[in-house]
Length: 573
Image 1 (spheres, rainbow, N blue to C red):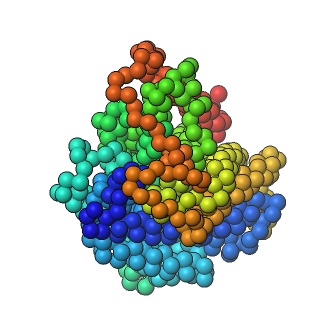
Image 2 (cartoon, rainbow, N blue to C red):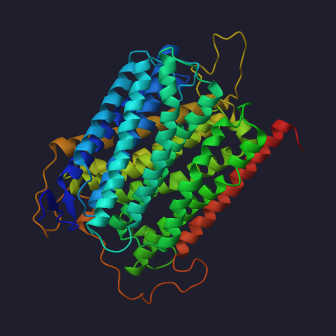
Image 3 (tube, rainbow, N blue to C red):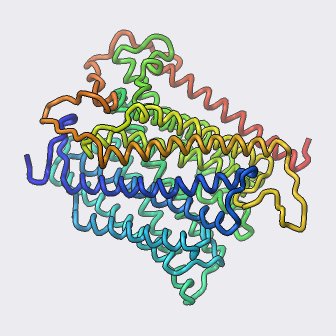
């Protein structure tokens, strides 16, 4: 064994000690951030639920700021850095480039996160996630964000350096694995995103010190290249995790690597254009800019997501069919390991992200339709079905394999772990859809009190709104239970779980392990089995083709309904 490496008994891969430690550190930091953001989420939910209305106005906006920054920035990016180190070092059997620099990056990220959290909790940064000027936070708030971003940027540089090391030292054969290619896509988008963040947060930091000025329209334009594009890092990382979990759980096959890689390239080239849909009601941006950025070029990024939305489940179907699960359209799905939390989390991530997040995102990104959705609860309904139901669920699923493979621990409270994705996914589905319906009745996105009780005017919502907000609260609390179980299982497993000490070549046995480790998918046959479907409708994956048709039908119906709603506003027909 080379110095600094250990051999994973399950996969036979060489795991570099510093990479393993950094994956652990970033994963733990991500879980802590999720805990903080989750507590804030419950407080925000119990305030938006008009029947409870827990917090006063000041604390509502304070906690809403904490929730957004802790979840969308700290939790997600800490976990994504862990994914980069896993993809660059573990999947390529490589040593990590400049481990000391990587640790310095982690320290910067933690310092920045702690500083930012301190400013938010002490009431010195009640500016929400977007922190629009002329709202002004304490200079230390902006400094904390800058430190965190610089640390994340250095982490990306370490990842790129690791790719170079792996290539030079020939630690793998053939082309870069698809999962690593997807992680590289996420890292490239991250660099673009973080540079935009520096371009706007550095001058805003000086402005908060009383040095110079910041134009509000310029701030909004550049900030959303950070705020929205950071969620596009999530999309690339999430899809990479889908491919990884598909292979680990059911032996998923890649239908066509060139097509999947081309879809990742489309993300790099066009996905950041989606940032424009946050500015569609801004008077400072012209109609031509808005139409271009929310139609022609942006749809190429949508095409990329639709490609992955087909190839990921189709790869799972083909992998199951070649192993004998080929009866009818859906035996491959019925006989899948639904008790494996890694598998169920992945499936629910794909379904909710696609059917709810993807459909609503493209619809709201249309300039004309955006006017009836912007700044209503429909917008957070959309991104809770993408970032939370999609990205977070995928990361949760990956955790159930990271714990035994990287932390070398059995998963504690495994019966709870098995139901956790079900609780979280069902709760987020109810929450996101109820929030979207409430927004369809005009319920505002950020307002503390939708009854406007202290306003000099009267606002009357449809009586159904109260019931919808109650359903939203039930869904949110159910998701919070699922999130709490995830944190309990993760923390207990990592710090108090039973240690796995396996000799090289020794198989995983016993309790507290996902099915993909206890019973790894057998190698696919060298020749195509005779029992596979013949070419025709759906080719070798007819079940996935049926699901895709259902998705497209839902897309068309939802898109039509929104144009119909818009016609009511215009008094047309």
